Image 1 (tube, rainbow, N blue to C red):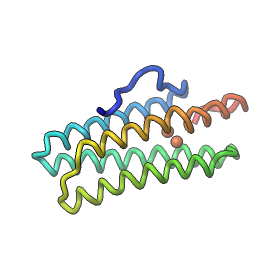
Image 2: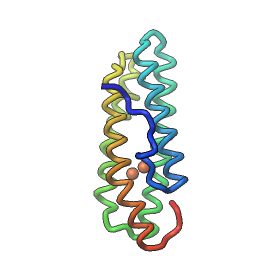
Image 3: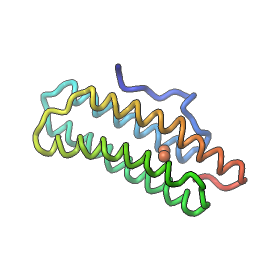
Image 4: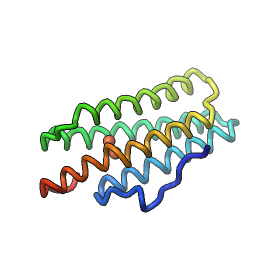
Length: 136
Ligand SMILES: [Fe+2]
Ligand SMILES: [Fe+2]
């Protein structure tokens, strides 16, 4: 298993969301690569922290938009975000304790994230379009 690379088929069609998603996939790739090299813990921490910051900002943007538009699946979507945040914070904490973070953790995170983009995020974007709303 490797970290998924970005592909056009993952696009939701929403430019803002897609740009943030591409950045997240790039960062999870950087996390995996630094974990695989395994020699520079500061670098591993740097990429994990950068991923955490970007993913939290992205989730906040999506959740603010869901609340603004009264999205009916907001709770299910938020639970999916919480699950991903739990994985990320586990990696952040392990890394800050000086533990080795395995590339398989980054790979698992990449796959969960991508599944979320293709399922819950795609449903949100479809809902916004159906309402004729503006982009997230
Ligand atoms: Fe989401
Ligand atoms: Fe998203």
